[in-house]
Length: 192
Image (cartoon, rainbow, N blue to C red; front, side, top):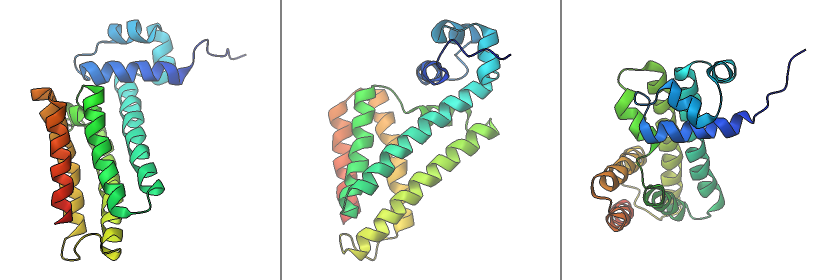
């Protein structure tokens, strides 16, 4: 008869995610995971698989959570341009409040070019966010909130690439005000 787990798998996954987010994949050892998750190696392997499988679950949880936050903003805001503004500001505020680089961006630079599964997951997440913004930009054009002469696909890619700039700026300078200024400038550049 199978035993019930004596721990909450999602809670322990969250602990692993925070550790990977802080240290990155390569700098996180199995012993770090054992210590942080409060589980023995056997429980980790039985529940999550190996270190790489656990990392992919953590990265997926992180990217899906961020995307869901942005999707909710888009869904709950009547004006498409206001939804875009809120998403941009949310990305900037999240950067400052979390005081660390986005786990997706960190993983992109650490593993995106050498790990096909990480690359595929990050590419899908970026494509989802870009598609969400592109749809909002098209709606903003129809509502005459931005010029019809602007290319929604290019603008959406531009916005997403600027999110990486927020995280890089905060990592290098630790200046939340500068990140907020970048967000405001990005919003103004979309409306031109």
